[in-house]
Length: 470
Image 1: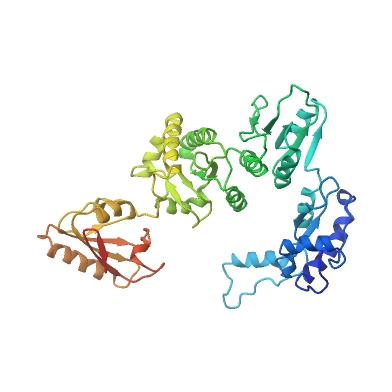
Image 2 (image 1 turned 135 degrees about the vertical axis):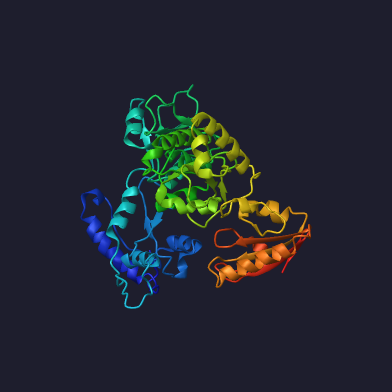
């Protein structure tokens, strides 16, 4: 549906003609009618387009509208034809050679992504809500879908609105054989669980039925108990908006196979115990293998990265959302093996810690270097601070502190270190003066210092009581 004077969508409209010819020739889309509407001639539709902001004639506002004969005319589905060069741009962003001399990226092409179009259209072909007129049809419906949501005696409009949002994630059906004594209900079934596992009852109000919460409920419980991390999963769980528990395991380390198995057992029990839709009490779960070990840095871990390792995050991915790393004692590589040796105890302790995290009683974790013997202050010596000891040694110190922030790749590193060592020995007799330094490439630096990211400059700060300044 377009205004003739809008040329911003010209490329995508030409692509629509191409994909409609290809898809229309296939048997699975034989019942689909492809067409074009001039909005000048369709006043009612033009008003709805105006209200949706599609009149702005922008390239990002070129949707296709899909009308279903079994759904109201004023509730069309929308999606877009994706051009291949749009995918090329995304690929170029991840091209490590982009911008290098003599490197030529792939040229752009205005060809449509036929596979993406057909996949999106195929999701809209089945009915949003199937009708089950016989009790015998329920097991067959459950068998056909990974996740089935079956309602009885509830508001059909709200139920359908939730089903529309969950296309491709869960299948919805309404039982029509309810008798006078049959109570209203909504139940969710998952095919991955054992056949004798009971359904998950909807925990919201059935009357009135909240379509938005029903959709959230179905999205959460449609997720497998454990999932391996991928970029698609990152986006998928991010859209749900629940906290995520993350377990790192090293499948390639055959010497610790038993520890990996025990950790996965404990993690699965935790995920089952903390399953639900309340973001202040429940979590979804993700498993990362050894190829994502560097993600542990944001959870307060350090090299050599420990396995197994556990944490909670508000958002998956790298550099997004608050992180909380479980407070394993040093050396973590050894203590995690003892921690997960008893899955029941590990589940109990992880669940207790997760509860404190979700209640806001645990501060976010940050990148921190290794806590060593030099992290304990002795008069006459420079105290090496890491983020894990910063709160205690700097903010919690009753002494005046001279703090050096430096990068270990700075020029004449050995000379600068020697100067600080000499200064510390010179001030040995002053009990109320502490000389400290923190390496910035391996540790989180609070914003209070105003330090630029990746800066190689050496900076000095003086802390007197609760004050801190250059």
